[in-house]
Image 1 (tube, rainbow, N blue to C red):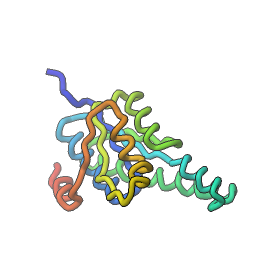
Image 2 (cartoon, helix red, strand yellow; image 1 turned 180 degrees about the horizontal axis):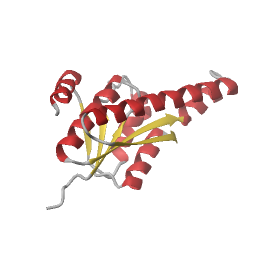
Image 3 (spheres, one colour; image 1 turned 45 degrees about the vertical axis):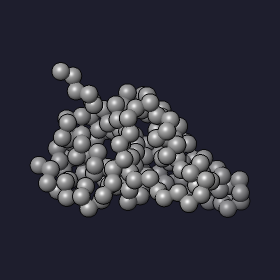
Image 4 (cartoon, helix red, strand yellow; image 1 turned 60 degrees about the vertical axis):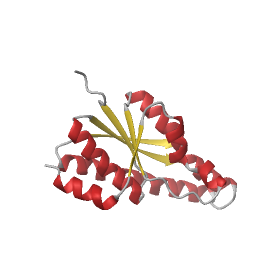
Length: 162
């Protein structure tokens, strides 16, 4: 019998929820022997909006972009090492663009069977809901989505994984 879930994509964004999602994805992939991919997206749309509204100068945008590149590398290395500690190879992807579009693109590219994300942030207004990239991605992808919650429990499960 073919496994139902062969490829998992976890979206990480540098938040605590993203960290919990990465641990949960490692646990799941290892448990069902699935291939695990991790994606970090540098949100260039948000950067260009900061320049357009004169919050950033062009030179500040470039410096901030370099900082975000370094953050992306750090978070992708974290999940790579997290997987290796449990005997799982994690394939990492770093993209730049609009978050929800890049998530959709990589799902199609790798033919992911499941998207794993962290807990959604609490929406304060309709505007927040419209601009929540993770929620937009969840709504437009053409594969099942698993939301990982309960950081303490996920960390305990990760520690128990041999």
